[in-house]
Length: 174
Image 1 (cartoon, rainbow, N blue to C red):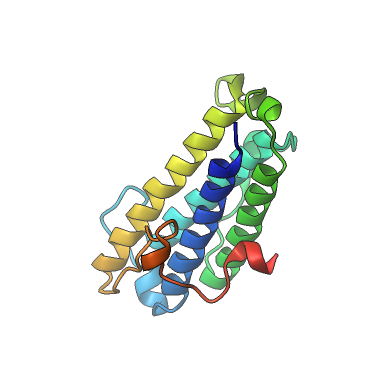
Image 2 (cartoon, one colour):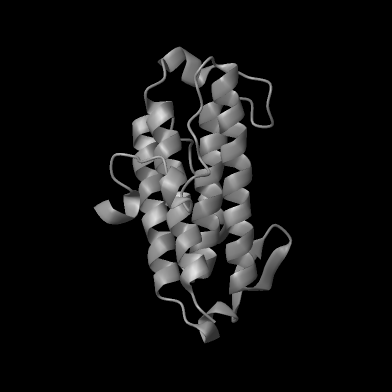
């Protein structure tokens, strides 16, 4: 089995985050921090949720040993600082996917769930992580509209003929 789909998903995730953060960091501060009707109530809280869940799953995938302690962190309120932290996380995920082979892809990893550790297949965990990222980026996309900001196109990575470029994809700058 080729690891290419997992690598491309991780790269797509980094590209979509770079594109989204370009829009978010250009927002007026009051629009960025405003309360909006949404699950997390604001753009920074939603972005911090994406980031901390990324940290949680990357820690499980790499046997980092941090576990649920990632959720004890304070939110990063500065959008540029959060963008840099997310970029680092995205680079770690790409690096992890590039190092996979079929045996590692199907092995079990330990995930520190609220009710204790579980053992989950790495490929299933990766697929869930990608879905989680897409889902919550979609929420931020909607919040940008509520803020009166034109949300960026986030689904063109794989479509070479229609791809929206960003300044430098995260994985090329790491």
